View 1 (cartoon, helix red, strand yellow):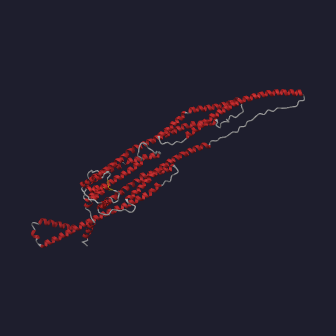
View 2 (tube, helix red, strand yellow):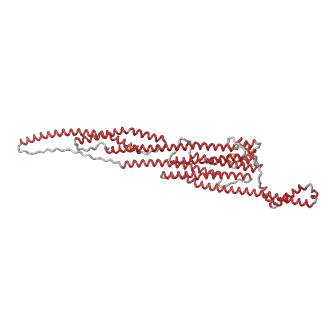
View 3 (tube, rainbow, N blue to C red):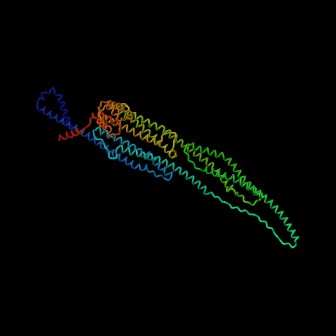
Length: 589
């Protein structure tokens, strides 16, 4: 073919050079016949070459489309299979028995959010981009739209992804609630163990007291002599009277002493019992475990503890008064050599118990001071974590929102050539990717907050979940917007649309896009068509809507608008042209 083409150009040049000087030569019928045959041969070769090029182009386009279809099917299958495996894991609500096991689940969930899910977000975004690109190429080539296998439509993947995120959100809330529940249970269990130990060592013994009475015996005897017997009896009676009087006086003195001791015992019992209860309550409060979540709460506990310590001098005075009562009892018993037990019949509380419990209270006070100060330091550290997280979240959240607004404005405003828009979007994408380090740092701070069991943050309205969702949406939005511009460039080049026409299309679309969200509803699109002179009946408008909104979503995108506006002017390879090309190559067979 190259040889024939060279022949053709050689003869065409010869004809131009020698036309004037060699006109006589061409009057000869033999050269003219040879020339016509050569021109016919060259023309047939050119047509064959054009037909071959057209078929090669169609085959290349079809092969590329087939590759995109296979890649879409593969990516969709892998993504759906990953979602199918992940959702049961996220829906598993089997609680663990210990805090360590639940924290291990939280760590696994954190790895999922930071390591496993982000690549799948990119795959999902890439899947949508490939699908949109493929559909655009098929429309440009006048080929039927690509219909994925059952269950692998973009809407199916979006639905599965929504179920995944719903399960994910519920899973994180469940984890945090379980950690709070286990923390509370461990707190209660520790309090139970402390109280059980206290009650197991407590015992009360009751002493049985016996009172003994002295019996006085009188000796009687017979006297031979009545007088002697009478005298002796009188003498004995006199002695008996004297002894009886002495005994009476001794008993009266003993009675007064015992009454004094009894009054002291009663006073001891009245004051020792409340003081003993106070000490037991103080020991329980000093050993009580506490759980706080803010500086205000721990400062309230510290204030209460300081108020308690302020009462210790008064309590010590009461203790000394009670000890003085017991010392007075022991002094009376010892001074008068009273053979009686010093135990108090009105009280089971002994001085040894009071001394032991008081010493225990004094030991627990500094321990409580230390634990409260340690908790205060921990709450200050938690507050620093809250403020550190809030400072970053309050900066990242608005930054993401601003970037979303900038991308939205760039997609609907007329800003020059599509290549310029593409460069601007690429710059946005570059800046967003570089901003990823801030997200990772925020994730690290969030991990520290979770490890510190901090569940609230009054310094920001942003949670890590809000930032994650916003970040994933930002990555998806910039990728989709870039794909939309690439598709517009592809459409423009394939259909021969000038930049001025693209700007006019964009201006018309923006004018009828009342909500300024990059979409026209059916009424907006109808008004746009009427303004351009279309005479629309209901049947004709319904037919057009099947072209621009095949999925029945109720909106018309800018890409669908361009496809409709340029549908009749596209320079594409139709089925009739491809068949004609094959006939040329087959010599009309």
